[in-house]
Length: 225
Ligand code: BV8
Image (cartoon, rainbow, N blue to C red; front, side, top):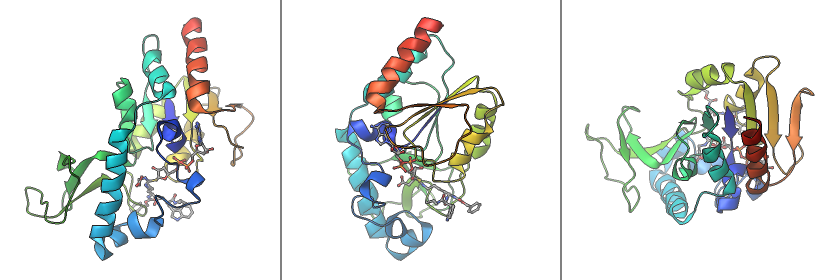
């Protein structure tokens, strides 16, 4: 079970949230990533997501994404990601669960199960779903429930090994997943920074950037298989 956050995509050029001082592309969460922001100023929200969608198409999977895809040769690798990019998919990983939505998709404002690919030129006011309501980014905003949590908790409960990559574990309920691994399951945390959360001593911290540390970890695991 691999649990990834924004640090996984940092070396692909996509900004992490914490490293940009809590601002995303110079926007505050409350102005662009909440249902209230969507009601108040949908144009600004669409500009924000269209810009990140444009950036994503310039980005490439990095060595850490590619290594996780290679790991599938010998292990049943389940990825749960907080990231809304599609870099795990583009690296070739097959089992990916997006907890917080996907930049490459949009959905009906009325029914979250009515999902479309993001138009290549981005989403505009007036782009409507089949029910005639404004399309919105297929993103879980702050203050919105995380529908995939049930499935994610089942995956963590079955894990034999939990690898946590590039997340500050600040956002809940996602962060709570790390504490749900069965007793005795090894937890490896790959992050260049200090771990700003107290994880009992069973977690092994590999310090460094994912594109350096994960290929080494994957080689070790493949040699062990
Ligand atoms: C919900 C989509 C209830 C948006 C995202 C007060 C206290 C506690 C909790 C709350 C609170 N107030 C509100 C809450 C709940 C809130 C929350 O947790 N807020 C936080 C900010 C405190 N959570 C919610 O609102 C969730 N919903 O609670 O609903 C509910 C229930 C029922 C009915 C109604 C309501 C929904 C949260 C989902 C929000 N959406 N993403 C978008 O992307 O546009 S979250 C978003 O931020 C990301 O998806 C990700 O999850 C998070 C960023 O975190 P990380 O991924 O960890 O990234 P970060 O930058 O923080 O850290 C990067 C890490 O990588 C660092 O550790 C760094 O050292 C490391 N790193 C850097 N470079 C590298 C590296 N690692 C490896 N290699 C490198 N090169």
